[in-house]
Length: 370
Image (tube, rainbow, N blue to C red; front, side, top):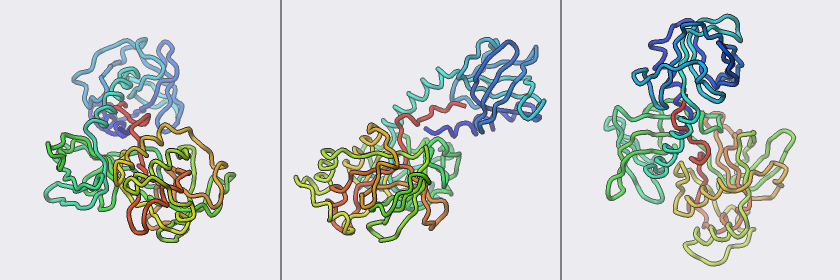
């Protein structure tokens, strides 16, 4: 899942690391007695490793040094993740008395394993009820109500407002989750599928809408979209992290037929423009209001990335975005999907349409590396 593990590891290691200076980042070069790293804040730091400094390797997922192995500085490779502790010599230089290492190859293996586990034991949905005293959540996933049972050991991650990067999800709490949030949970499901014991929960507040493009400003990286359900116009910011995809005509017709419950033909495009469909918030991780929603989100991950210049006024879009603030008319695009006119036309007015997921497990999962 997201690289929110950075905070976990740094907090855990801070309990035993010297308080003077710490940096966490990715190794760019290695020379005798020196590392050059790029921190997660994007800073280039030159690290002098003094004689006698401890160099320890831990497996991904560790939050203490009980399983650490002593290694040589020469065992560190470009791409490895390190937490260095010592004292600062300058804004871009420090001397390390201890280096804690996670091998990039180990992180990659764990990432794949966790991605597979999320696919196998994870479900997503829209939060419909919260009982904080009982530690339970109710989500709607693929038309079903599912009880999410949490424990004191449940790990919470929260997707931040204004961020379109799934890896930016930070450690959170049960209290941050609200009705209407999109949520992804991993754990053991009951035999009848009506409940799940949560080991990890990722949540966020996103805006899902379906609308028509009013204007496109490719130079400024913005477009305006009129929501078909509310008739409200939104300014949508498109960044380098936004996913812009176009659904092939054949696939759009297939999903439209599923949205109708199996009807063979797609309704005219003009029906979508009349406001006959709207996109509501639905399950995270690719879970929409039905199986078609799940397949749609999975398909998007395999489509080629487009550009803002490919979009034109009058074109229909399905959008998932983060809001800069509650109630704001300015959104930051997570995913923009064009070519969806048949899908929007297939859903009667007032009935929830299939929706897009705000996140993807493919390529963005993080196995808990530093």
